[in-house]
Image (cartoon, rainbow, N blue to C red; front, side, top):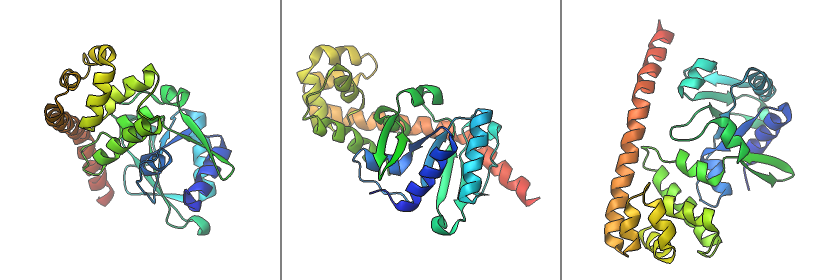
Amino acid sequence: MIPSPILKALSSIRTSGAQTLLMGGQACVFYGAAEFSRDLDLLLLIRPQNLERFQAALDQLQAEPVAVPSFEVPHLARGHAVHFRCCREDLLALRIDVMSTLRGVASFEELWERRTTIEVAGEAVDLLALEDLVLAKKTQRDRDWPVVRRLVEQSYFSHAGAGDAPRVEFWLRELRTPELLVAVATSHPELASRVAARRPLLDAARRGETAQVARLLEDEEREERRRDREYWEPLKRELEQFRRREKI
């Protein structure tokens, strides 16, 4: 069960009418990847009316900004995360981290159209679709890669390894378990051949070369980590500038 302070915060945000999507550790819990997080990670639509609604929710939660950068559209649009800490007694110390754009993931409008909505204790919760959450988790952080693997494995096993074409294509694009990837590729060779144009390691999977697939998956992960470091490098420099300005 999702911790009640987080559910209370989500309820207040939804009541405000602000469009947000749950991501991060709490979203992973809903998809069956056992990652626990005490923080609330949200993707936010940065249109003026939506920002006003979200600010109203923050006020109701008595959420105060912490760290840098400040809660401003240019910072969010650049890809920065903005951090808040709730001061309301029943939400004391709950942290809310907000972003509006993610590396390698579609625009908020597209993500909203294909979002997943679930009901928890009578509250509707909007979260990133599974495929988008998987993409968002491909970072340079060590802890994210086991989560990516578990998220896709959960999809595979919950459908007993037999899905419709879009789901099988998702497995072919995102499975990170060599044995499962070989099983799917050899069972769907034509689809695997088409998807291989975007994920070349599927050629080895179609041939049943499990050890080679494992090596190529490691290469793939290293490249994604490199891209994430490259993406964040200028943003980290900007954060340092923000911190220095605050000290002046």
